[in-house]
Image 1: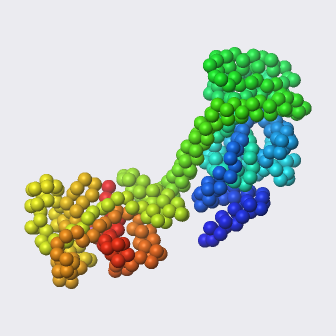
Image 2: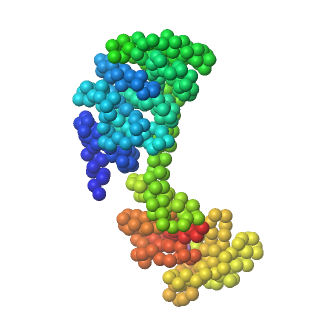
Image 3: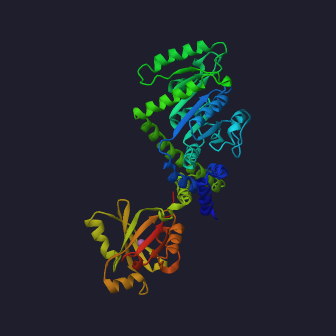
Length: 455
Ligand code: CO
């Protein structure tokens, strides 16, 4: 009910640097609170040049320890750091931190560090729909550096290259048969290689393999990914990693490649936002239709679109007008006009149909996607009869095609616009219609129509 004030209260918490408000906001976003997401979007711009670092690599290579040490160095540079640990093990609730992440926990109480686990989307992998929104959120909160950790498997790690400015691939010696077994795309896309646990046997071998790979796939690139040997448990090589991260960042800024990164994130934000709404609306629609045989997918599609637009919260005013349904023309006798439209203009004219509620006969003249509606009164009490008496034949009303007539109707009422008859009635072809008063539209009688969708 009180969602708006709820959201505003959270935003207030942001301004007071209340980490609990941030954690609560994260949960709401994971639950798909679109209002909050939209509000965050307007705040996102507060950090001019955020630094987003991706750290990926197979399980067991020591990413968490590495990140833990990196946080230490970044804090010395007065950075405000948010860490997202993306976890493919499906069910994490409320951002609980898994065992492996405990290492980073010593920073959890540091006000300049925020740590959060993020579940991935279903079995197919892929970063959570909401990760990009969550990143926006920590930026709006005031963090300027974001580290996203993923476990090297599946789609997630391809997404991380799109999300991050700089991606670090962490490997370790004795990685089975070496890097060949590792996803080819990943080694090719990494900006920095870290060989962690470099005191173990085989560190040189894997470094050689990376060099060979780099000389093949990166030969022409301006940026040659450095290959760093690190022992993060002993804090060896972390400073080197930080220097390389900074060097890559400078490279992105000076080469303007940062703009490409921003563009990719922008598109990802749109894509994920739409996918997330769509998936939610789809499951709802399927649930509603579960007991029926569905041959007409359009019907499902329309359900989904309605739902998505209704969810949009703020776009009450986009009441789903799809276009002009028709233009109503008052005539004395439809039969007298058919010849003109059909024979001279060469248009298709439908059979006349009686619309009881309005005491008229109507015939439609098809013109592309829209129509003219010829209206002939069947009784002296018809408003068309009155119109003819006062003004003579001519344009009587304009009708908009709406997706959701109930919503259109309630928006009008809410806006205090006068609705004729004060209810939705039956129009031609089983459609549902209502009219609003010309005095509230600048002299035009307006009709709103929701067509029936008979597949
Ligand atoms: Co009409």
